[in-house]
Image (cartoon, rainbow, N blue to C red; front, side, top):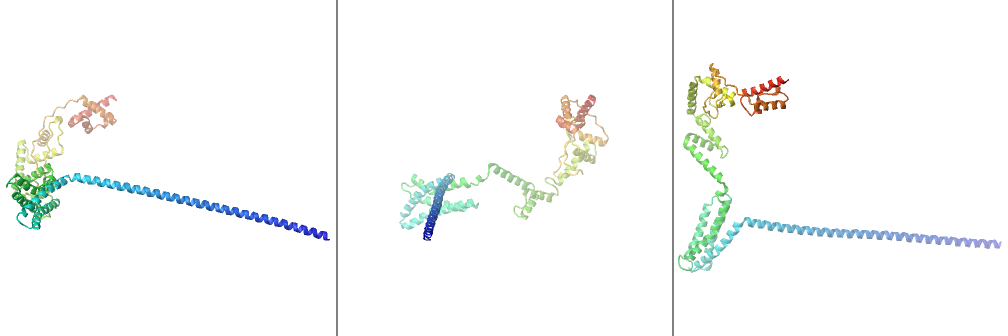
Length: 424
């Protein structure tokens, strides 16, 4: 019994020791697992910290690059602006070369002129401040007038009054310098000092001539055209006084520039003479006498002549073998004067034939012109291009042979058509 008890105690202790061993193993495993987990967490944290530091460093480097690029661009921009400013200044100096030259000359003229004016005024026992004020008054007065005149030129205002003041002040200064110049009276130095008083305003005026000259704004052709227009206007005024008076009334009655001058002249002519330009009652009467004389010369009445002219207008001559073309009349179908006036012309061959047809007379027929082989070849080629001789017309035949009268074109067309019929 006791042996069993001891054996059980031994087994129990053995089991407890085994359990303690397993607990220690489990605890050791748990500790090792926790250590591994902590190490892994530390590794992940370190990697994340390193990655963040790397990203921060890349961001700092990128920002540094951006700042360097921005500074570089800003530097290039300032350099381009300075280059552009220098180029603009150089271009302006080139464009203002006359101004620069004029300013240099004016400074070289004003300094000695002002010095000798002060010397002359001080010689009259005037206080220094008074002498300075008087000398500056003359020079500054000339320059006030000069600058004011320059502005008036740019604004297209009268400049005569400014020029009077400018040259008056310069002349006063020149007289003072001439009369009080050192050396003999009237010597070369006196003349030099007098000229120096004119130098400033004079060379500025020369600069103004080059920039604002009255003739510089118009070309030679434009000035010539303006002179012709003025002469034409004077001729109108002298030759047609009544029309010109009405013309002036029309222009004056309307707002300035609202009526075209040539239209106003045409209206004035119509109001005065009751007809179009260059047509008067005398001209119309002369035309009537000329029509009667022309009709009498051909042995027809005036009405017949009017019909002939209408036929000539409707069927103008085309030259060629039928003689010269009848010259077109300017008369309308009613036989009255046309809009722009009519020039009486002699009758051509077709006009005479029209009159003879109306009066019952017949004219001898003009012999037919022989057909030119070259023209026939052209018409044959045209028929081939058109797809047959049936497509030929007087119009396209005339175009193919380069003109000619209608009868000749008809003969060419009929000849080619006859050839094509025979060859079928």
